[in-house]
Length: 326
Image (cartoon, rainbow, N blue to C red; front, side):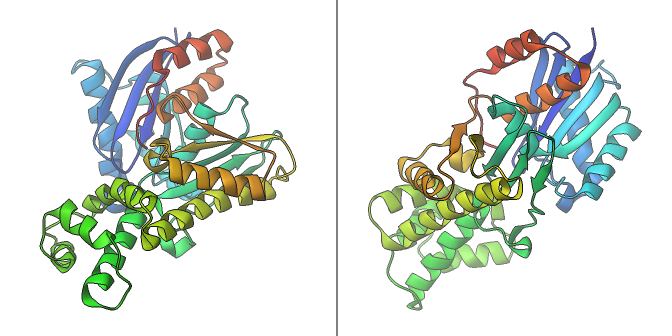
């Protein structure tokens, strides 16, 4: 029976699953972050191999499977997808391979049809849309350089920005100052800035500010609420623009929401997102995927093998309710 090595590579972790053609999950594992843009393509692809070997056992492959279906962060442009695929094939991880952005896996994991729109808000923010005829709408997703705003990293930076300005008098008073001090255990927010500047604190620590930001906004802090409102606006804009590009804004279309910021289902952020979609695209059906994106990667791989509905159902049943942050 043919197999698929499904890969969901994100900024915080890499999930793999070896899946048989009938949808049976033969092995699964989790490894470190997938960071081709900062660590290089070779180092990122190494993570796939290391994670697969831990999941399958030291005597396994390569090749690990008939087909590698890798849907990963950092594959934001076609040339990046090509480079990652070439590296995977050079390592012989599979007899054939396809590489795409991780938003495609989120869409396949959450949508009931092979088309729709997906918006991910995890460490960063991105969106993709696929029409019933196969037309694709996507974004460069290169951060602020390409017009993006938010995600865990961006929100953390905004919290720190406002905290520092509240501390030194350049900005309005906000409870976010205490949030930063408590989260990092410092007397001053400025100490956090210096720790980041001198490399004593990893930038990823800023992501930990997001839950406290949401709680502070819900408690009525005006600055915190403005950030949550802005994030909801960005989540809506990315999805609605994809719908418009595909001429689906007037159609009944699923919009799959994923990534840790959205799958946390915080009541304030969720309600604001729902409100904006109702105003901008009232026919859109919002869906929060109940299976992790690695399932979407596996389903895309099984689609290529021609697997039927029974395989899809078996795979989904194995992972049902197992959503993890993207």
